[in-house]
Length: 150
Figure 1 (cartoon, helix red, strand yellow):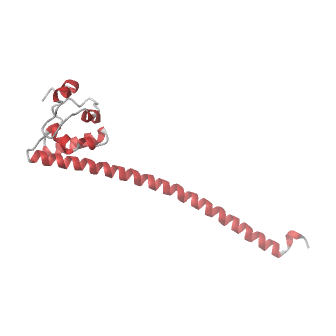
Figure 2 (figure 1 turned 45 degrees about the horizontal axis):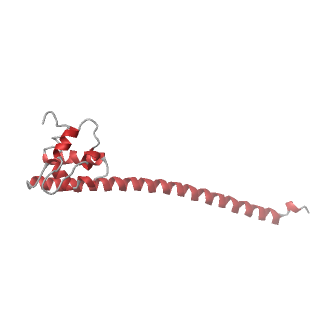
Figure 3 (figure 1 turned 30 degrees about the vertical axis):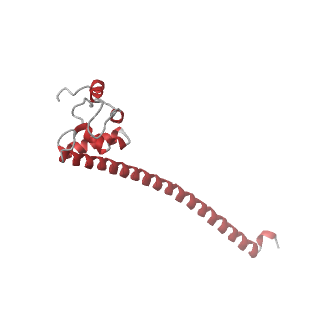
């Protein structure tokens, strides 16, 4: 009897090949799952960041609207008191400006010429204010210019 021809050897070989094939499928399935999990985790991270940004913007806009409607303050000073410096990017500040304008009917930054690609984050960071007034209004007007139609 030859070594490779016995039914027992064939049976052991079939079992070994089945186990090896199963292990290969198991490993491939694991790595596909890991890749998919990483993609889902990244999508969740992006969605959470967008939600956090939206929440920050809404909080600032709601505070600003309350200040304007109760005649406590308005315009740029109102945005600053409402916490616009806590927003993280120029895009977030632009969205807050648009939402505040939509809710109050007045652009909070109407006095300044900020339409031509001005970085709003830098503009807001350059503002110096207290609870009563904007301390460096003249410097801001000199640096960014007064809007022509204002």
